[in-house]
Amino acid sequence: MLPKDPVILLSVVNTKLRDFYSDLDDLCAGEDANQTTLLETLADLNYRYDAAHNQFV
Image (cartoon, rainbow, N blue to C red; front, side, top):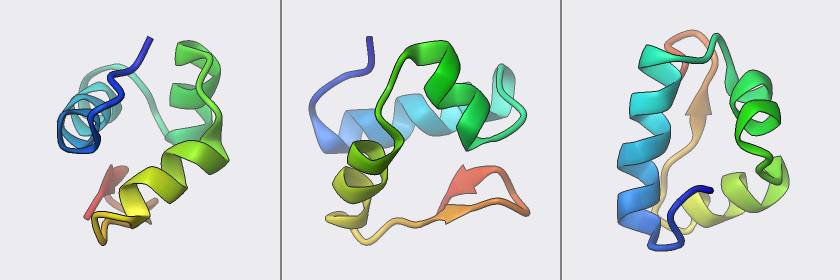
C-alpha cells in the first residue's frame, strides 16, 4: 500500500520506479494502485510523470 501523504507518496513512488518498476503501468499493477488517482494526487504538487526518465518530475 502506498502512503497517503502526497509528499511522502512522491518520494516512495519515484524510489519504486527507479528500483523496481520499468514504468508507471508496472508500478500501479504491482502496488495495486489507481493510476488516475496517483497522477491527480501528484499533479496537485505540480509533478508529472516523465516516461523517458521513468519518474515524476
